[in-house]
Length: 257
Ligand SMILES: [Zn+2]
Image 1 (cartoon, rainbow, N blue to C red):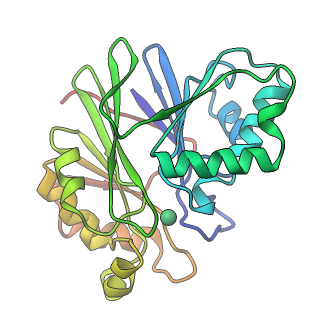
Image 2: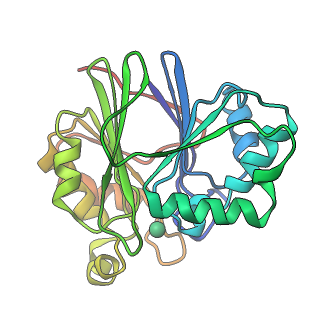
């Protein structure tokens, strides 16, 4: 399977980067993880067919992760999508999204494609014959889910926003790739952890403990700093595998080792 990042920034945007959000392309299945920026524009730019998208996975209801949801639903309705769309999240996030979509009157649009609301924390979901997706709770300031995706022995886990948490290590065991937030460096660890976030050092430690081969960092705070490349160095000092600052719109392949 392949992952394409549309953005890697934390809540504050930057001239070179948009809020963290990525899409997954697998055999017989594609889905978007969180919805920021201009979702349909980004999907098209990355070569995804928005009409064929199977699901939207939402990790939590913070603005930077979900403000694109109304735009996504509105755009899909405008381009006459007929296929149902699964929206997979934890229940509190789903409840907020229903409120958000109702605010814009989007759930009453004539001819709107079916939306299937799915609680992703109840067990592994079979997204395609060979692909399973599972949400797991992480430690943030609102109910937040990390995700684990597996396709024929290739697997990755994504932390979403979280303070260091044993559940992340458990969920990423057996994965080739861990996508971990790194909202700052170790000098701000106390503040970050209190706010439900992790430093790059802690991301590196999580990768080392979980046994993955590759660590992808995201949720960068360009205002508080330091820059992603410096965070990469900090994480790398704690982890033997490769640490990557994802390039926007580049495909990252995840495969069985
Ligand atoms: Zn958040």
